[in-house]
Length: 435
Image (cartoon, rainbow, N blue to C red; front, top):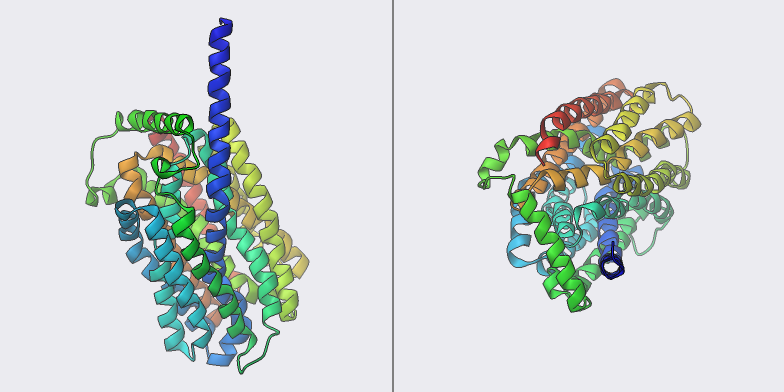
C-alpha cells in the first residue's frame, strides 16, 4: 500500500470515528434518558402497588389485568405510530409521545378504584405507543450496522436502570404523605412530570435525520449518508418490495417477533411483579426498593458490555442465543428460591440473560430487514412481544390468586424462553445466509 493510500485510509478512519462519536454524544444521552423515563412511568405501578392495591381495592388478578391492558393499547397503536414517525419526522412525533404520556402518567395519582386504574393504564399505553420501535428505527438512520448493537444496548440499558433508580426512589417516595396525598400518589406525580419536560426539549434537541443535523460538518454528513446508502442498497438488492399488510406474513418478521416474546414478557413481568414477590419475604417498602434494584443494576452493566462484545465480533445470533439460554436455566430455579438471598441470585441470572440479549437481538432484526420492512417490521416485532407481556402478566396474577405462589407463576416465562431459543436456532439456519 502506498503512503498516499495509507494516508487516505487513515483520514477516512478518523472521519468515521469522529462522526460516530459526535452522533453518540449528541443523541444517545437524550434518547436513553427518555426511554429511562418511559420505563419508570410504565413500571412504577410495581412499587406503587405496595400501597395502592390496598388503598383502591385491587386484587392480584385485577392488578395484573389492569396493568397489562397498557400493552393492549400499546400494541394496537404501535405500528401506526411508527408509520407516523416516518411521515411527520422524529422531532415532532417523539415530542408528542413524551408530552402525552407524561401528562397521563402524572394523572395516575388520582385513580380511585379498579375501573379508573384500568382506564388510565389503557390511556398510558396508547400515549406511549411507538416510542421504543420509533427510536430503534431512528437509530438506523444514524448508525451503520457495525455500530448498532452497542448503541441499541446503550439505549435499552435504560430498562434495567429505570428499575434500579425507580425502585430506590419509589421506595423512598412511598414514605411521603402531604397535602392530602399518600406516598404512592406522589410517586406518580414526581415520576410523571419529567416526560413532559423532555417532550418540550425534543423540539430543540432532535433532528429528523442526518441532513437536518447542523452539528455535523459537510464532510461528516457526506460520509454518513454514503455509509447508510451503501448499506440500504445492499439490503434492497436481496429484498423484493412488500406492502405493509404482507409484512404480517413475512417469515423473518414473524420469527423475530416470536423470538422476542420471551425477552418482552420476562422484562415486563419482573418489572411489574418483582416488588410484590420481594415483599412476600417480609421486608419493608424501603427494603423492597433497595433489594429490587440489585438484579437490575447487575443486568444493566453486563447488558452494555455484552452489546460491545457483539459489535466487536460482528456476531448477532449467538450473542442473542447464549443469554436467552441463561435466562431459561435461571427461571427453572425460581420455584426453589426459598430465601431472599437465593431469590436475588437466581433473578440476577434471569435478568442478565434477558437484558444482555436485547442489543444483539435488535441489531439482528435491523440486519435481517430492509429499511422499508423495518419501518413497520420493528413495530410489529415489538407489538407481538408486548402481547406476550400482556398475556403473561394476567397469567401471573391469576396463578398467584389461585395457587398463592408467585414462584409458580414464573414457569410460563421459562417455557417462553426455551421456545425463543429453539426458534432462533431454526431462524439462523434459514435466514442468516440471505442477508
